[in-house]
Amino acid sequence: MSFSGALFVGMIAIAQNQYFNEKTEERIKRLRVHEIQPVLSIQFEIDSQSGSINFEIEHVGEYPICNVYLFDKYLWHLFMPNEKKKIQVVYDDSTVRFDEGRRFVKVLATEYEKADCGLPKWFNVNYDDADGNKLYQTFELINDSGDLFYSLEGIHDEMHNDKKVIGA
Image (cartoon, rainbow, N blue to C red; front, side):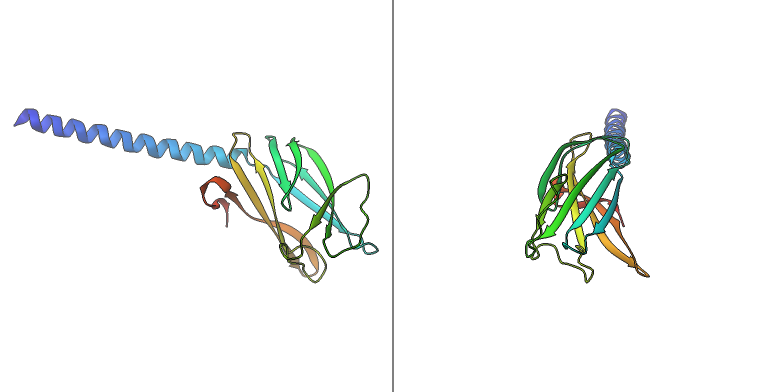
């Protein structure tokens, strides 16, 4: 009986060790995902004459990101830390001519609801992070006593049914 008891206790110890190792690995992976995510600063200006929106996006994080999409359009293969990118956004119902010095994105009004001020109420930035995870950040338009800005709603994992990995 003592041999079977020792064997049983040994199997329990092995299973418990394996369980805690898996939990530790999951925690380390979650921390790594948080650590390598880009921090994007979104600035914008509405051109009242043309109705276009000029966005300036600055990557203020520590790690580069790849394959960047904005408003469902592929824009950049690589976005480096401390780099600024400019794009011009217009809705599909607009007759705006775009500025040759900027990337141009035509947005479908049926996909991206317009706020009263003419800005999209929300948008996603899709990308591959430094470890190759396919993620997207959702930004929501906030109106704080007349001050308009885009706030990060959350970071979602495209590969795991859009599971929120960071955010409220």
